[in-house]
Image (cartoon, rainbow over all chains, first blue to last red; front, side, top):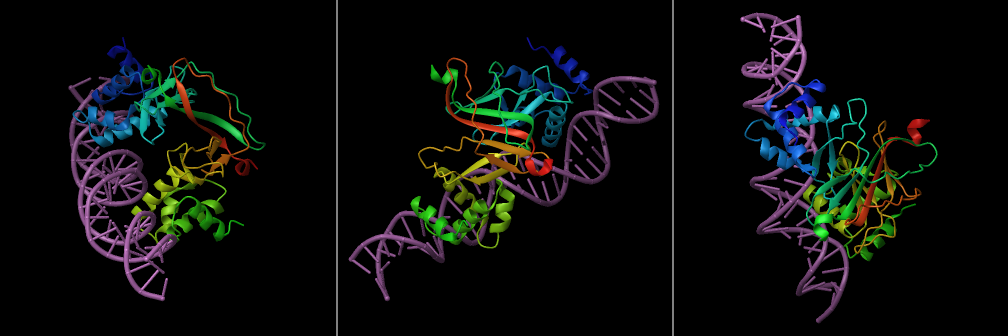
Length: 141
Length: 141
DNA sequence: TTGCAAATGCAACATTGTTGTATTTAATTA
DNA sequence: TAATTAAATACAACAATGTTGCATTTGCAA
């Protein structure tokens, strides 16, 4: 489903060159139903790219709004593909992240409606990061 | 205001011994109106305790519900004192964290009412971590 | 095909996380 | 008050991740 052509188009549309490392990272993220731990990405990229290359690649992807980064309940850094509404100007990944304490999986809950929060006077909100920790669908059954 | 006697009592009530390093950490956190970056705590503890001591100390404080840990919008690890309602059995720091993009400060907004979120069927919520990124009160004026 | 900006590789170093073990110390009790 | 002991600390050692600079390679457009 997420064929390589689409990924290449995604790269081009954001001004990125088509390189093996970048395609591989997008493949990994699009094929996963969960946010992927940094360590796992590094592991899978080990054969085709340097660690620093991956580091910089992830930064530029994030800056361009292709992917987003999150810390789970244990502090583990994970990455996930952004919804198509994101771009360099503004991320729109304002969905809830769910962290499972059993399988350690992190899921992007795109269907959950974001709550409206009233801040104290003087504060200006810019973006929201909501996470819920608990037991996921799979681990409940 | 947050005198040392209170901090010692806090330690004792959680089964901790009264040691210079532990008292110092509590002093730092109680005197700060913001969550304190790990690097800053380490810097201030450098003279009186080893890095590993601090590491284990923070872990045990967190486990006992004396302090809580958070990642700001840039991923920086910060610590803050827990409200008195917390204990080893269950943290009750279910307040919103506000991360300022100007001063990089992280504030615990205890007065903000937590929103009610409806999860998809099959998910079981356990705890919530809500953060808002923007411009804080001080930086707005 | 060539030229250039983008992307990568490599070296080097900083910060933070983590474990094991020997030693010291705070607090209890004899 | 001295002895006992579990808690706390120090130190060594190592792993993982973050970060910068610079030389080299490569994708792509002219």
